[in-house]
Length: 364
Image (cartoon, rainbow, N blue to C red; front, side, top):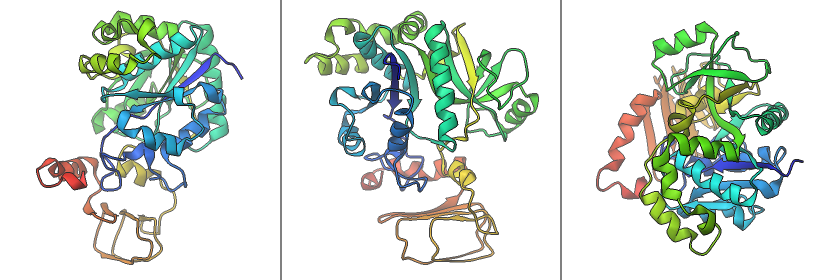
């Protein structure tokens, strides 16, 4: 296995899109929401360990999640746990990890990935990532993995490619024409029908030296706060250095900061059964095993009548759920909270926004 290959798993997110199962103290990347028996981050680590030397796999997360990472990935070398003092989105995370990796290996090629994807075909995934890393290691390109849309989903970003028809087959590298943030339904339908767009998987591959150059070109307000990294990274002074850097660092995604601006953006198609499970509704869409009325349940103790297309999740498998007359709803039951609301993501967000009010601190 190529010792110049590195994987950076970005695991610092704190969103509560899976409340009440996910909480601020333990967000979704550390949970087994998909029912696989392993947390998202554990699955991600095992997946990339087949493509990247284990000693080159890095996890970036917040200080307060360090113990959870150590518990779930005990074989992770201590020096490969990169700790952020604050959450500042993906661009600062990638800047921090890039400088650290460059100090260890100036020849490194990095795959940067979220910690919370589900992949159906693990073997094909490894083949695709291996091909992308090989190509990016030999060319001055910033690669992203694109997924051919099978529906006009408004929860994902889209990428338009130059020339040719978008295909699920491994057509090789394609030059990017434009990135589009999450569109509305009508625009998403146009994108799907045009056969020129892919979903943005959020998985990026590049030479560490190249992404450093492009970040310093397009986001100097981010990279400037890391001035002095050559001497301060991997020293006792690093923690104080990062506290100051992250305090001064803007919140910005690598997509908006660099990928939408650079002339070196390329895409490699991947058809390995990819899911970015970022909402309860996305989880519902992913679940293949449903009852004849389209309800998805993780318990056999249920009595459903005149119910359709609901998602029922419980932590208490002994409890019976008797439900009648619900359609397109969430029923999520945990030890200290019960959520019943429409499955639509917007309504869910509006509903749980009340958790920010005083008196709900123990339930966030």
